[in-house]
Length: 471
Image 1 (spheres, helix red, strand yellow):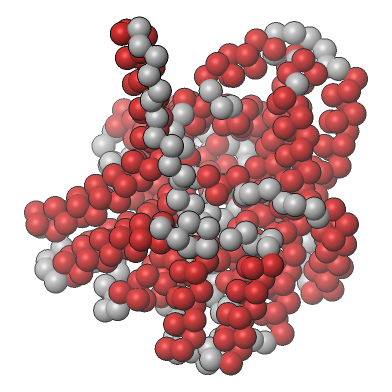
Image 2 (cartoon, helix red, strand yellow; image 1 turned 60 degrees about the vertical axis):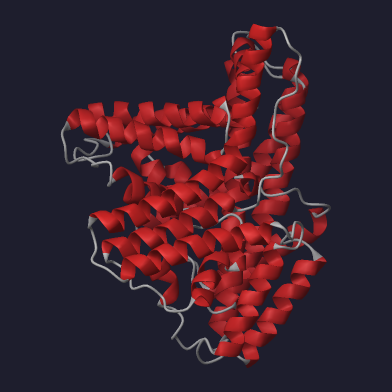
C-alpha cells in the first residue's frame, strides 16, 4: 500500500480518528487493537501471504526472547537460543533476498562447464520491508539477552512494535526501548503535534514526489543513453543527480514515517542529519541512515570486538561491517563492491587519523577533507546504482572519453534546480551547527509548508516506489 494512495489515506484517517477518540490519554486496549489491525492490513494489502512470514519471524523471535527471560543471561543455553533466532531470521532473509542471485551465479557456471542451456533462478517477489523488520526483531532478542530490556508479556504488543505501519517497510529501524516507553505517555492531539506532524508529512512528500521523482527521470534518461554522458565531468554530474535522488527518496520516506507516527502519538528516531555536510566518511555514516549504521555498530561491530583487540582486528571489523552493510542492501556485485569501497575508505581514514581522535588542524584542512569525502561518497553512489559488474566496466570506460554533450548540459541545468532544496537544507544545518541561526520557528515552517504543498500539487502525477522498498 503506497503512502501516496487513496487506500492509505482512508486507512490512516480511520486510525487518526481512533487516536483522537480512543487513544487521547494513554495507549488503551481499543486504540492498541486499531493500531495493530491497521498495521497488519497495511502489510498484507498487496501480497496477503507474506503476512504469515511477518507473523512467523515475529513469533520465532518473541519465543526466543521469552526463553531468554526465563533463565540467566550469558550462559551456553542462552547463547544457543540467540543463535536460533539469528540463524532463523537471517536464514529467512537469505532465502528471499539472495537465493536467486546464488542460483543464477551457480547455474551460469554449471551451464558453461556442461554446455547445457538450463534456466536457473528463483523468481519470488521480495517481501517488502523484510530487512527492516528482521533487524528490528533481532535487536529485541539481543537486548533481552544482554539484560538491557525486559521481555514483554504480550505477543500482541511485540507484534505491534515489529509491524508499526508508518515505519514498517523502510525504517527507521526502531529499538524496542525507544518504542515501548512511549505507551504510557499522555497523547492528546494538541496544536503543536498537529503542525509538526503535518510539516513532516508535507516535507516528506515534497522530497519524494517532487525532488526524488524529478531527479529519477533525469537519471534514468542518462542511464539509458550512455553516449550522452561521458568523461569525468559527465560521470561526476550523473553521480550528483543520483546522490540527490537517493537522499531525497529515502529521507523523504523517513520524514513521512516520522510525521505519520507523530500524528498517531509516537516519536520515531531521526534517520538523516544532513549527510552531505560530512567532512569524513566516519561522520557521513553518523548522519546517513542513522538507524542502520547504529544497528550495525551495536549488534555487529561491537560483538566482533570493535576496537578492543588491536589495530589489525579493528580494521578487519570495520571492513567486515561495511561489507555486510553493502550486502544488506541486496544481492549483487555492485552492492557488495559499494560496501567494500566504503570499508576501504574508512580504513584509509583510520590510518590517517581523520575524523577520529585527531581533529582537523585548520579550516582549509577541513574543507579539503570535505571535498574528498563528498567526491568519494557521490562516486560510490554510481557503483550502488549499477545493476551488474559489466555495467560498471562500461561506465568506467565511458569516463575515459572527454567532454559532455550539449543535451546533457541542459539536463544537468534542470537537475540543478531539483538539487537546490537539498543544498539549502544542508546549508541551513551548517548554520544551525555553527550557532548562527536557531531551529526554524512556526511562521517559517508555515511558509515553507505552503511552498512545498503548491509544488506537490503542481507536479504530482504517479509517484514511483521508494528506492528502499526493495531492500
